[in-house]
Image (tube, rainbow, N blue to C red; front, top):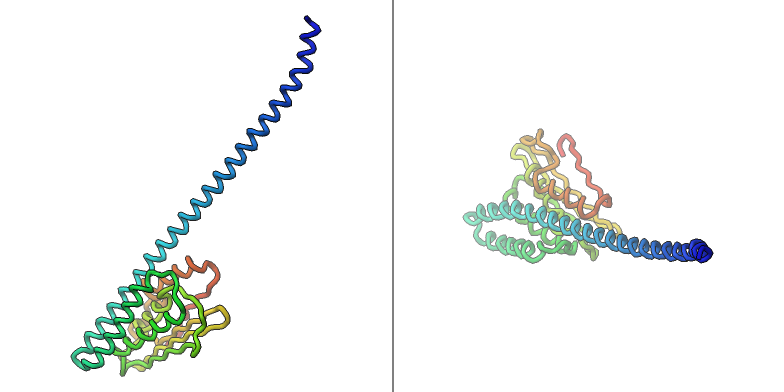
Length: 234
């Protein structure tokens, strides 16, 4: 009996230890797999939530911009109705195109660069109503516009800001807007004379420009460049 007891102590425990170690390894492996999948699932959920947050913020920022230039445009056409009714009709058609763009293109994250340029052209043309004799307005862009996409209504806040802060009733003023394309890069330059009445106002602009800065950061991260210069008269 004693011999059998000694045999069990030296052999069966060895087998049980191996089995125990194997069981621990299997359980640990399963737990590791579960933790990995859980981590991946959480990471995916975090990414989806972050993306939804960014999209929501972009939509919020974008739609804050629209009312500003639409209000200005309506005011300009209203002033033209009594002066030149026929021209007012033409401008209303342009306004209709602007509204169509906002309604149908506005909800899109991006639009064709050509569509954005047509929008800007109509917008600038409508702004001429108010400043026809007070400011020189130039808008240049490629004769052949490349097939590139651009975030919807990205440029107009800077153009609107130029009209808002760049027109002086005391001296000659100008608004100069240019869009150039080099490869897959789009270069936009908006330049305006500085009105005396806003010499001490922050050149970075109001809500529209600040929102656009945020949109640029959310969409492009570090893959963009924005430079705002404040010179004596420009």
